[in-house]
Structure formats: structure tokens, C-alpha cells
Amino acid sequence: MAGLRRLVLDVLKPLRDPSLTEMALLLAKVRGVKGVNITVNEVDVETLSLTIVVEGDDIDFEGVKKVLEEVGAAIHSIDQVVAGEKIVEVPELRRGE
Image (tube, rainbow, N blue to C red; front, top):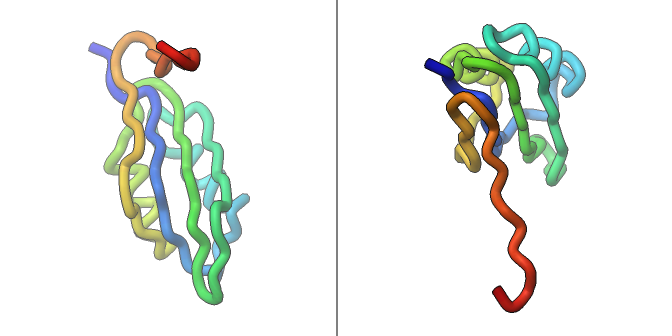
């Protein structure tokens, strides 16, 4: 049975260390993770608002959550979850449909 293939997370992280590069490398070490994309959406005085996309095969969600907690980050929401044998993309509808 195939597990989690993609997670899109809305995350709030303090400005302090680790850097985004270090955080991406830590997430990439989690069981099942094949790739990580971190995008900065907003910078505040003390925090970064991030979108984190994690892709792989049978991603260990608890492992992802643990890494984020260890760096002081908090998951605000889970914006997308893809599971199963293949990644199903949301179809782009044309105007008027």
C-alpha cells in the first residue's frame, strides 16, 4: 500500500537559526522524503511565514512534524495532502467551464 506522496504545509518559523537551507536538509533526511521546497511568503520582525512542500514515497508525517518542532516552527495548516500509488494533480479549469 502506497503512503503519503506530497504534503503542502503553511508553517511559521522564528527568524533565528537554523537557516532555511539547513531546515530543508533536515527535512530531506526524514524517511520517505525525496524532495523539499521551502518558499518564504512573508517576513515579520521575528518570524518567517513559509510554504513547505515535501514529496516522496511513504513520507513519515510524524518525522516531518518532529523536525519542524525541533527547529521551533509551527504548522499553521496542512494545505494539500497527496497519497496513493500516483500523484494526482488538481486539473486546471478553463474560464467558462
